[in-house]
Length: 156
Image (cartoon, rainbow, N blue to C red):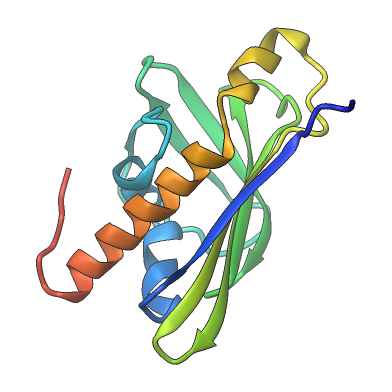
């Protein structure tokens, strides 16, 4: 049997897509909804706005990653390929997709795709990005968005 290398989770969130997208498009918020507890920090002012843009994250291990945006549609879609600083992306991709169901409900889909990863030393870590971990990210994102929507801003 072939190993599954494209993992996704999705669920409906009772908020408009635009409100949810504000959080996804702001890397400084990513550690607040990372279901793997792998992200530590991102600098302010890196709002994702277009394909080809890069943003930098610090991992909980202290390592830094440069993320190249490879898919973007304002309010609906953002995907990036991470790489250690100064290196080419090794072949994995993170994607967030938002599908408005109506004016107040959005289907949120989170995907981790490591189908192009060839460095076998990275496979074990890639396998840790399970559907459950992606679902935790969606849950944390929804909780953060709902708290902000309710006026109870959540901070680091």
